[in-house]
Amino acid sequence: MGLTGLQIFKLLPKTNCKECGFPTCLAFAMSLASGKANLSQCPYVSDEAKQALEEATAPPMRLIKIGAGEKVLEIGDEQVLFRHDKTFYHPTGIFIEVSDNLSEDELKAKVDEINELVFERVGERYEVDGVAIKNDSGNADTFKKAVETVAGKTDKVLILLTEDPAVMEAAASVVADRKPLLYAATGDNYEQMVEVAKKFQAPLAVRGKNLSDLADLVEKIVGLGYRELVLDSGERQTSKVLADLTQIRRQAIKKRFRPFGYPTITFTTEEDPMKEALQAQVYVSKYGSIVVMKNTSKPALLTLFTWRRNVYTDPQKPIAVQPGIYAIGDVTPDSPVYITTNFSLTFYTVQTEIEATRIPSYLIAFDTDGLSVLTAWAGGKFIGEEIGPWLKESEINQKVNHRKIIIPGGVAAIKGKLEELSGWEVIVGPREASGITAFAKMRLGA
Image (cartoon, rainbow, N blue to C red; front, side, top):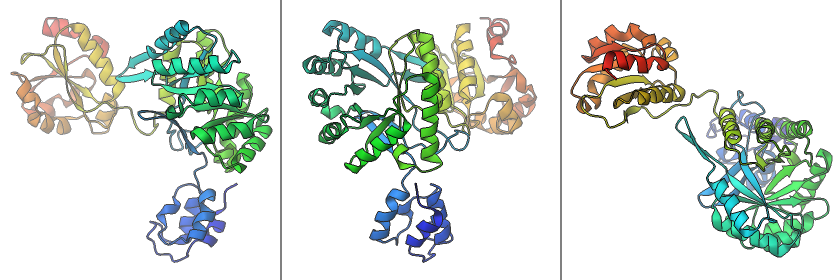
């Protein structure tokens, strides 16, 4: 368990110099204890005190990196139990499991299928994070060959699944530069597995029989000098996995219980793709750092990726697109000009409806800090006084030979002031994006 603020205060220089950004050393100590400050902010802490404090003031959950180069999955380093308290930082890694019992051609085809699991939704790209290769054969050469085959077909992050240290060492040797996650150290093999992990400087998954056994096992491994760990309580029933994940996070965040201060890995058990996706969504919600799945159903995975994106979006910051002028189709100087806010859902909905009209058009995403149309209007960000001066100086004046702009019908009240300040003619469009096609047919001759 971490030190209290008073215990930390006793180890600080007590100069009250304020160079750390806090008015007193006591205030700094209290912030360190609550995880709101970093020890490096104090320029005068002694080396002895620094050594004593670094472990006690470390983040409640260790940041673990799996992979190398451009393909690195960061997990852990979470600070809160609930996203509305702050935010969640490192989205759950989604992996697809493959067996080394597959023939080389089958394995290549499976990896090709995984590589093609890419989705574009509201301007964002979703894809599977990695591949988990399982040693179902029990044969070291077969497993090593399978790992080589998978590594040759994808640059995604890898997990090696075997409890045999010798088999793990042979397979890890061919992808050592990829820094795969080694799964798993258990009560029977942890000493040998730690040696393999140290040899390749790879993160190591630790699987216990239950939470108590997991905590004991982690302390033993830490005692051997290794801390690049990912935790698995050993449970597979959904409700029990959920309970264990919640306890691990709660003990790490609230109690600063160091054996549980690491990210977690989970495995789905459902055969039906939609049920498996639902099970995975449970683990994404609370609090799986990695989910290993078997199915590659695109509809099921899209629901999972969408849910993950929602969970790992900062609740205090709307999802926004880059403000600017977007061309839809083969625009000309005669193309109509629409305007909306830069809230992602609004922008992409309007864009889709404009595309459906088949009239090449310009769409302006006006900077409203990611707020929707009515919210931005009510907040004074999507009003004539803001849009007018911008529009008057905007480069859209050089792109079209007319001065007509179409605004959302819900904010028709801004028409007068916008025309006054911009010099443009304002056309009031439909209230809902779904009405754009009918509007275009009537007003633009679509």
